[in-house]
Image (tube, rainbow, N blue to C red; front, side):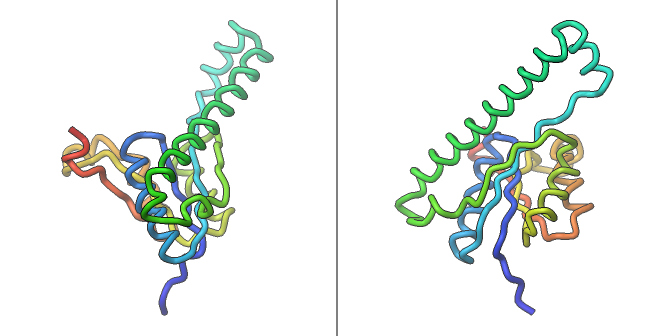
Length: 166
């Protein structure tokens, strides 16, 4: 059986590694005529920390600040995506049309990534990682490692080449 790639979940933390991984997601989407859902997860602060912050600034101001941050992240992702599409325009003339939606969600990153892939009925998860060897993989890239271990879907984890990470 040949797998069908119709929907790709691209998880980003807005890092250079994630930007590099988007090239793979875009290439696959272009080749297989698949749609991409872009996901950015904002880690939730602990309930105790949130309560402390709310006691200093007030619940209403904290909620307003959280909404502004979410809007800023959505705008930032959209701006980066548009910049990437301009760069790739010569190579992939359909770049502007491959993004189905952009989602910004609060939660535990690996859990949200897996849940969103299921909700969006994705066939593949694409994400970047920071590790370059066994030692740094043990320290960095925990989200990618957890997604790979727990996802029922195939996961493509992309490393930034060493020449680009210097």
